[in-house]
View 1 (tube, one colour):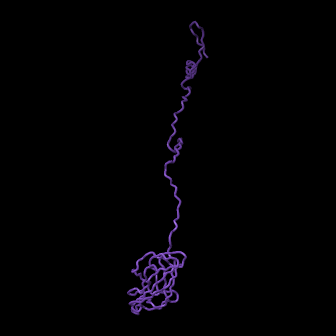
View 2 (cartoon, helix red, strand yellow; view 1 turned 90 degrees about the horizontal axis):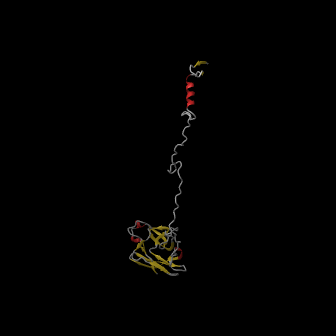
View 3 (cartoon, one colour; view 1 turned 180 degrees about the vertical axis):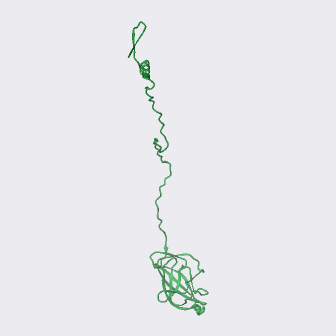
Length: 233
């Protein structure tokens, strides 16, 4: 330390040397009083703006909503299905093969043909009905083998529904063509044992015994057997 002599009235003053810029900073800080410097002032604490949550369905922060419950209409017509009803058939039912007894009667001959009546008697305790043509063919061979073609339908009798009471009969006319009117080679004559008969609308046949002869060919120029529609007996 060096002492400098003041030539004024104050006598001696001690002058302390300061080291460079550090001394200037200290003096400047002392001159500022108690206010903090800009370098030491705390930063702003204002929070950043927060983005509003998205409202898109399924997005982050989406607000759940509940759909209003639909209220059923009280004026809709009733959809209740009415109960099914079963209508039972009324009146006589078709005659079955099992309730009919079949026989032949009234044989008559004329001009190369023989006419025979097929009787269908109802053996049941109640009435039944018949409508249309029986199915008829010759059979033989001891085992029901069909001989020749099945009977052709004779349209001379009109078709009608016939009610057959218990114990009563309906009838159908058979026309048997004499096999000798055909060429023998074309006819190929064979013995027969009778007829296989399907009553109208039935799939079960009955056998009617009536031995004879008939053409076995199915390619004759005309039918060898005809059958008429059933009629009242």
